[in-house]
Length: 245
Image (cartoon, rainbow, N blue to C red; front, side, top):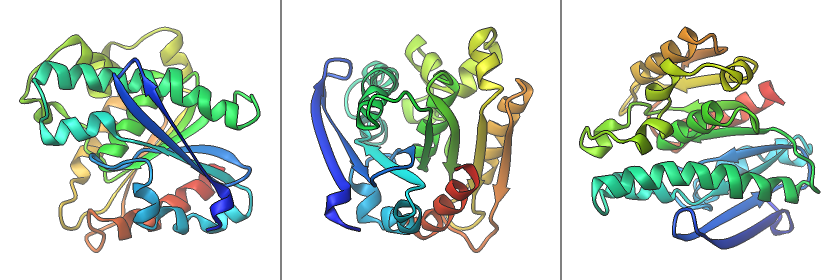
């Protein structure tokens, strides 16, 4: 992948009270925001071959890939700080994505407010599905790969309004009105292997919550030969991006 197609930006976010990086690959095409795994940074998907796996799509001008630091995911898995702060950070991280990262993507697209496809592996899958459900005004589809969608266990089974607003399994049952109307026009793909460290049951749980609200979705079980690892996601992401773009 030519370095000329890669651009990185970094700024201090008042919402999450830390710096965040946004990295872009590609020249033209549909914008795709790929969330890293739980503790990953904005360049994790490149180091693990996911950008190269999408190389043909980038070369065709079919997609532009963006990725960001997983600020809330890092705190989630390391349990850094009080649980209330970690739940607050998750909510604020999603607000940062909506009100800082998406506008930065639109600016990179020349000011065009094009709907963004969200994707990611593992906790990144949770983030992708969560921002689509929460902000269907700016996201048009989500590709969740090997997703973990019941995240309360990372917060010691605690609860707060921050967690409620950030976790679709919590807020979807009560969702009504224009947000739900828009979400019903979107698409969610929940892909998972059934091999080592995979939990396709989590995808089925997410699908059930989406289906109960009339949100188009499907679960793709890739089978026991596909494990919770980058090899799996390098196969999944290009396939689904070709389907959605």
